[in-house]
Image 1 (cartoon, rainbow, N blue to C red):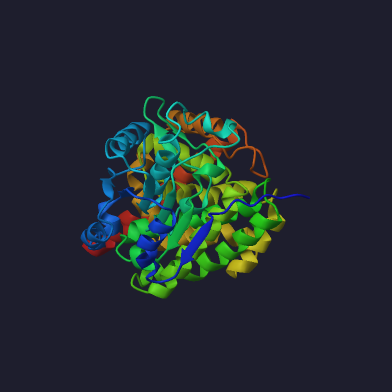
Image 2 (image 1 turned 45 degrees about the vertical axis):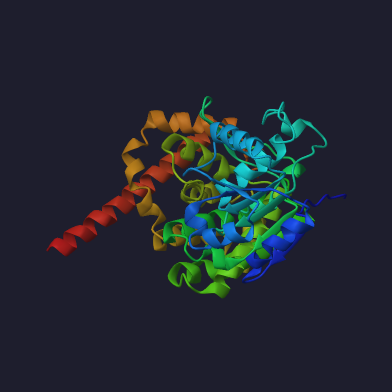
Length: 389
């Protein structure tokens, strides 16, 4: 069997490794960097960075996940300012946008749908610095951009989207709000689990998937409960990176297919949507991937594969993921669920599921989500009644 493994060319990891940025810019011979960032991610470091990298042009991205319209705006600003390299400092949305900017700055006549069909692509030098743990976008050959006209998330894959340099420094993740810490960490855990049970899994992706599951499961609750535990955050960041390598060289499957549909419909964060769907996808896929789920359970320290969905359900409860989605429960009508199932079937991640779902199967999964949110809503109301008494 022959495998290919796609990785960033250089990985700089460790607490305070962000201080290496200027040196990495020089090594890539970037004269005028185009730095995409989110203000919440950089916080107090922004002014210092502007002084340190004085020839850079800074582009603050708007809130939410990247769109084709924002890609066009960023590219126009890059060209107006004659930038020759791209740096992303932020979460998955920032990195995904930067990937597309680095490629399309050099290939203006391509479309997102063209990219996977072209064997080799030039792009601008590219450095990625994640501030969440995480989407794993810094490790992957995939970018996720929403086409606003089509109302659809596009996720083309190409090795040219993989950065030249990745800097992994957990000090940049400390100020992330608890909800985003939770959503992104659960997304990373889903990346690792789905990569391991994917029909495209291989020996090399398995290695990184198992390392990711170990790192994330050992630290996800600690980071949520102790947000300033920098060592646990660094381990979680490394786990997210390993998970990114795993699914980039394997694939995700049904939790991501259904999660993407949910996110587009209700404009919810990607990690939140994936975390909501994953327990029910595991229940659906359990028999077809039982041995693989059994291995995952052993890594986490669960007594059997049949309890893996319960483990994720409990993580969602402890980290308030179920409660975070209460507002959509009455909107999940049968008609909307039919639409969500159709959208999920039209996206990636269906054929790589060990048990390939049909439309009716996906509708049942969404109905299970609706029922779970109803149960959680009942718990919330009961607790409120108890307090009032």
